[in-house]
Amino acid sequence: MVRRVRWRDEVSELEDAYERERRLLDELAASIASYRLGSRRIYGQWGVAGELLRILTNPFDGRHEARSQTLRMALVAGVLAELVLAGWATCMDASAADPVPSGRRWQRRVPGAVFVDTRRDTDGVLAVTRRPDAAHRWVAESVLRQPQPRTARDWIVDLAERKSPRLERSDLRLGFEIEDLVADRLVRAGVARRERGPRGQTRLLPADGHLTGALNATVRIPRMIAQGATLSTEDAVIAALMDRVGLSRRIRRDTTYRTVSLASTLPLLPADLRRLVQHAYAAFARDAATAI
Image (cartoon, rainbow, N blue to C red; front, top):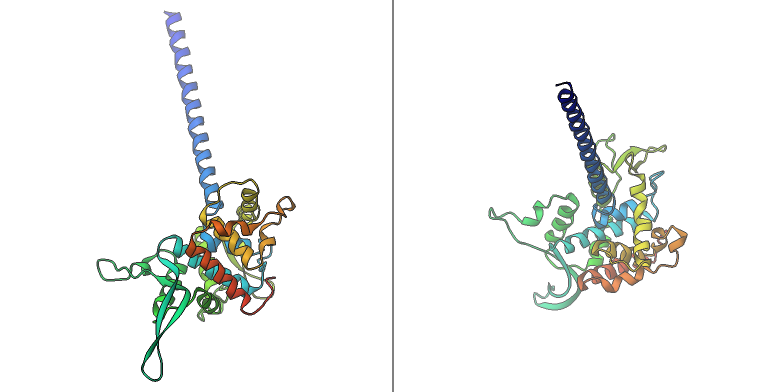
């Protein structure tokens, strides 16, 4: 009888040990899943424009890693690229009829014109205006308000110069609409924060624990190119834009990848995205400005 009781106690202890081990394994699996989710968040989930803003903003002091105007042009091109990738916009050569003072109309060629999808929902509202991202909505609505087609270069130059609406003095805004909207995307996602700088200016800094994520794209993209890995279309657009607007060295900080050619990603892009990147270069070259 004593042996049977002892045997039951041993079985019970084994069952308890098994249960503890199972719980530990479940916790480990949950931790691994959480880490992988965090890695996916860090490695490029913020869109082309979001990654560009992180690359071109110094994560330690919030300063721009490029001329402010160049950064904003890159952000507008990034948002347009996101709309093209999502199927909500195209960049194509088209003909447009312009009115002339005599009342007659003449045809002119519009190279790289931007067109936004005008599909409507069942209630008659333009579907594109219900995009969850505010930067997408702002760019799409700006294009739709223009009656005549305009080139991607013209849109990049125009939208990059539009300032944020005046708000309360205490409100932390970055000054220009496109930069504020893309920054909002990162702030809402919890990877960045706004704060007041020592001279009263607003700056964008990584949220706690996301400093590495702010730096990873500067190494991740050239490393993938050097290793011959297949880049996502988003990464290829980022690399091509950085190369065409003269900021390639900002994405090649690691000396190991100093000789990597970011220009090699441009031929891999679909035709409308290649056209968009070339128009971003034309917008930058318009003022013959330096990138840095």
